[in-house]
Amino acid sequence: MESISSLIGQVNAIVWGPVMLFLILGTGLYLMIGLKAMPLHRIGYGFRMLWAGRTSDEEGDIPPFRALMTSLSATVGTGNIAGVATAIAMGGPGALFWMWCTALVGMATKYAEAVLAVHYRETDTKGDHIGGPMFYIKNGLKSHWAWLGTAFALFGAIAGFGIGNTIQAHSVADALHSNFAIPTFATGTAIAVLVALVLIGGIRRIATVATVLVPFMAIGYVIAGLVVLALNADAIPDAVALIFKHAFTPVAATGGFAGAAVWAAIRFGVARGIFSNEAGLGSAPIAHAAAKTTSPVRQGSIAMLGTFIDTLIICSITGLAIVVTGVWTGGENGGPLTSAAFEAALPGVGNYVVTFGLAIFAFTTLLGWSFYGEKCVEYLFGVKAIVPFRILWILAIPFGAGMDLKFIWLVADTLNALMALPNLIALLLLSPVVFRLTQEYFASKG
Image 1 (cartoon, rainbow, N blue to C red):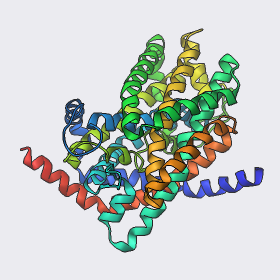
Image 2: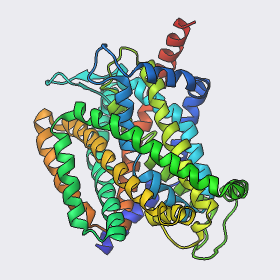
Image 3: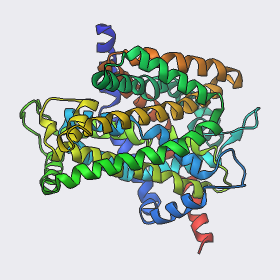
Image 4: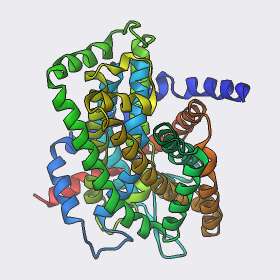
């Protein structure tokens, strides 16, 4: 296991090197410029379309609102609690600044992904609408680029078992074991049963569950986080200054914090930002392709809100709570670090807020990513592969609950990068289509 971990670590250092970080941020910045900052100044329009999209009789499988909730069910997960904490623990407070940068340009990336997903989607043999990077590569680019779509589907199918399955199961099992002494295998088995009950109903049941749980869990966690910040309001200015300072200057070792270079802040901030909001990863457009809509731009305007909600709101609250309470110097990492921050402000309560929030976040992520992986497998092998995939997905949950967290994060990080590469290349090649559709749509609106 040690040799395998070392090998994956070497691959991880390559795929998350300067080229990948430049490609992620550069693609988002290029799209934002090409769209003339539309994702920023049209954010109000996006929220209006989201509210209007609660119901729809247009072509598709689920209403636009539920498509976003399904997408958020996958993105609002352990990345918002454990991922942010890991970024700060490994890269210092400055990592949060780079997460913000990733999210700002990521709004343009997520918008472009959804526009292309709806524009190039297909209908499978069961009558369901399917789309995503593999389909906009297949239908939007010339045949010699087809291998990119296959590569994305392959990496996406495998990556789901890291980012969307084992990490989620382990995080919940570890939290419940630490706080309530519940055996990790028991937690994993219980989650597997619950996930199985939902997966039987496919995308429509996943969307229904997500529509109930996502707003509930997000609002509840945000309120608790705001209470933590309110109780430490006097420390917020210094915390913000610290975040900006260490985004560009190294942070020295202090307390249990080993210190971090600027490169660590950038690397872990961008990597965990992508892990959390998935902008550029190519996963979210798979959900948006199922939306009941005839307008790619309208759905893209809704999709970009996912990055705004996930990172600029929820992750910011987690990160600020960790910095203002000062627990980031204590040597903790992952979920326990976030728990320590909430517990410091809300003794006897904060730890449970994070534990239960983590459990619900992880459960919905397991549902959302099961759909992503399923569509990747369907693209590769056809609808006959859906049931075997679902069985394998459910069986992996108890297994992941007892795995080593460090190894899981390493594998997930590596697979995320390999999954993002084909998608980012496709976004750059198809960007003229995104710009044209956007210009025509808003020109028709006057």
